[in-house]
Amino acid sequence: MHYQTVRPVVNWVTIRHLDANDNLMSEQRFTNNRTDMGALWETNLLHGTQVLTGSAVFIALTGSLFTPTGTVTALLGEIATFGFSRVHGTRQNYVAPTAINGTCTVDIYHQFMHTGTGTSVGIGMAALFTLSAVGTLYALATFTQGPATLALGEKLDVTWTVSG
Image 1 (cartoon, helix red, strand yellow):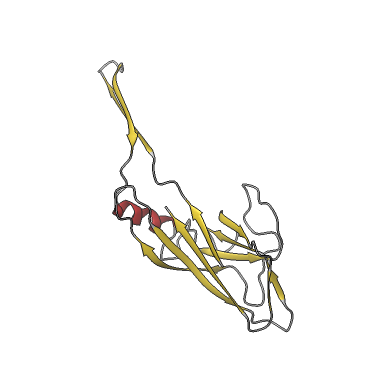
Image 2: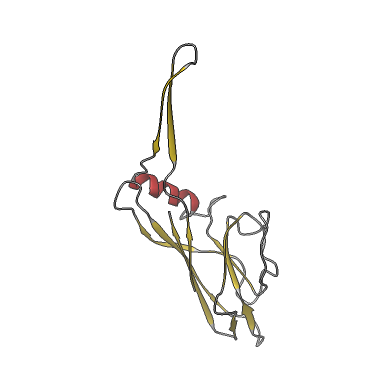
């Protein structure tokens, strides 16, 4: 499964020149110029290579379909058995921007394998969280072709491509 989340790459910068009495003398507003190293820092912060508090790299799965609120810390019916528990994804394939304010991408990947009993497991949503338990829900995707039903020994690849 492949899902993409997009973050804005252009922010506004406001520069104000004030005199000694705090009277506005001039003001300029323009877009910032994020560099390639700024993009790498942002990616390291949001999707770091280490297990850091606040890094959105933990992949969770559920068979329940629902619309989350802004305070969701776990998926409704989040699967915690049979090899489908929330896991730290592997960060890979970082592509730096090629120009000022350019887009960078990074993949967060994990291969899940049904290791339980003979019971089939239906999975219909995947999510990225900031912690291995609870945490902030960073992104959520519903499988558009319907739930994947995995039998014992079957695998599910999840690759989350994040652009910024």
